[in-house]
Image (cartoon, rainbow, N blue to C red):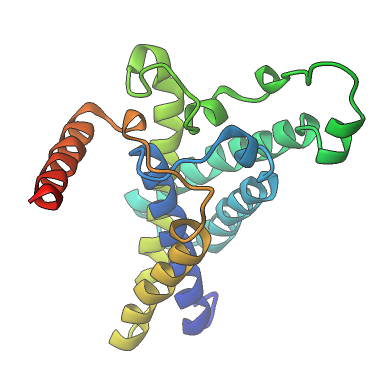
Length: 214
């Protein structure tokens, strides 16, 4: 065992958190504005580091199909997230002080950052789930979810006690609430959802409005 059981507990919680947050963004359930996301470059650096640690943890582990898939995805996602970090680092938004000093209209340089950032944010106007238009962004996010889910599963297998396994989910939910669900920067916009989920959301909203009116 490379880590102690307690460290695998923390690692499995973090990997599950990463998988769930990526899924919520993909599903259009928790999305931010582009201005906020452009300031989160260190989150993408953290994401890259998680994939690097998984590579170190499991490169010498017993051979399996899951490990083989994981190694491929972790390698691809590591490179991808280093690119995302550098892309945001090299093209930061203007600070408040720079905006105050700027003469004339504030220039919009958001075209310099990767399209996946636009696709992830509520300002995106095109159909997010049209594979012909957004297939690259969808594929990258799905692969990232699978990569983190693989890291979670492999770490979770090292937890022998039931209390530790339950604590993994409690820690993940606590982190999810603190870092996403409880923050005002994450918005719930139906247009970001796939059509099936959007219809379900509309039905729930209509039902809730009916109950409130009665």
